Length: 198
Image (cartoon, rainbow, N blue to C red):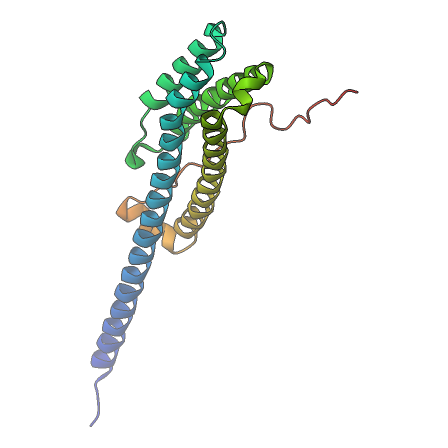
């Protein structure tokens, strides 16, 4: 059986279109999977920050029982917590600007907590209190979980951003509305080494 040249060309075109269609579907599905992984990682970051925010009132109340005249420190922690929890960042609203605002509020809360924990050094009875000790351990564990969740998020965002920017996936990413996701930035002053004096 002999095929006409026009038929052969048509079969080749159909085969190419099928290959292109299958490739496009695979690329699209990969981008969807990577985006979902980023979204899940962001949810974990938020969960850990919320866990920290939930511990703070108990920590403040425990310290208040011993250090009643440290009201300015308590106010700073309470205000920073209120600010940090008022900024909710939906995964669909993740932009460089929104993430920077979110990170700034979380960093202010971290700073306020450091001040609160520094104040406790002046109260040996407080440091020996079992509730305070337990809260401090939980807070430390939560800070570690936050760091781990942020690291996972950063890794997932890198994989996603690389995948949607590579050729030819970048063509499909643009067609289907996939855009890069923001990363956490280093904290202000993180590049400076702390000064140690003896």
